[in-house]
Length: 281
Image (cartoon, rainbow, N blue to C red; front, side):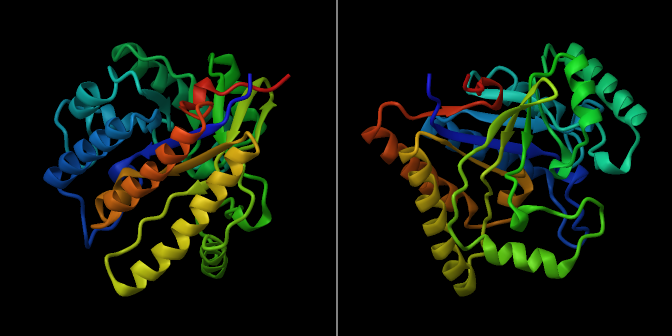
């Protein structure tokens, strides 16, 4: 059966990935924004995959680094949501040993057991991985992972320090529509589900408005054409991206409204969790 439609994945890390000390996240804006995000997805009735950093489960008190109570209340029992792993420490896997990764996976197993979870999908920090990491996931009953499209203009540096010039070039290409159909294939026994785009939110300024106009034109063009080819389209972002963007919820709402508009015209369209994606024979 052909799978075509929308995949949305959320890299849920907060302070484990957000380090702006001059503009820190507050507890009130975290919960208010996360609740608003869940309501937005429920409003449009779209499935999402939330890839959680294990350290978010530490302790019992929610703060910018830990969100165990909010996760238990809002994510675990929601039928539209898949809980995936984003590793325990959010380390970049090309910079650590396979033994360290094995230890990380063991800690995530413990978290899963404590919270009645089963991790089927992995979202690697910065989408970096080695074949050895995939083999370890296979040994631990994972079935899927998120990868990136194999396009030269989308590849990021394999190490922590990234070229600023390259980042500017990548940001320029973000405004140009390309064929970004999701690539699904098997790698070392796991199903690799590529992204299409990192979903960007723009500031509520004149420059932000202009960038947003061209950016969402590109997204809508790419998504509609992917569906016309019976393909999948996959966006992802971090919660702090939308928390710190005053106009972010409006931008995401417009995008999901457009998806549902196309869906009313094509009854074969669906939204998918990453673990629901299959490989065509």
